[in-house]
Amino acid sequence: MGGKRTLSSISSMPVSGPAKREIWGAQLHVRPLPGRDGGLGGAAGAYAWVFALAAGEAEYREMAAAEMANLGLFIAEMERIDIYDPHPDDDDETRGCFERLSEKWPVQYDSFNCYPADQA
View (cartoon, rainbow, N blue to C red):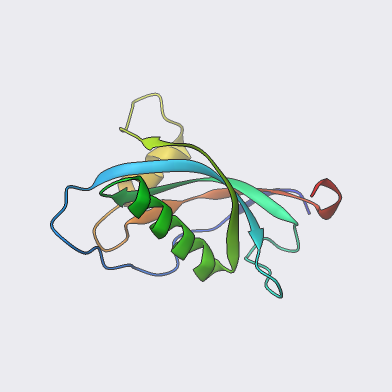
């Protein structure tokens, strides 16, 4: 039940307003909403890096929460929230997230590192 599950954005989100968008990201601890699996295959929860094109921290939080809710997940914790710039040393998953970010698909993530119920 533990291990990685690969999920990707499931819905596009319109980005409103003319504000300057930057890449915001955070490491999220997510858990399934009551009665939902959240795509985690029965795991109690998972950790994942989630990136979004946002005008600031508040908008990032709103966008990340909306995307996770679309998956059937809620954010239990959010760590290391900040503005991120692509860097040559980024791993393949992070580079892929940055490459997929667009106005039509402003929230991106890849592998969810799941943990079983006995670690919840």
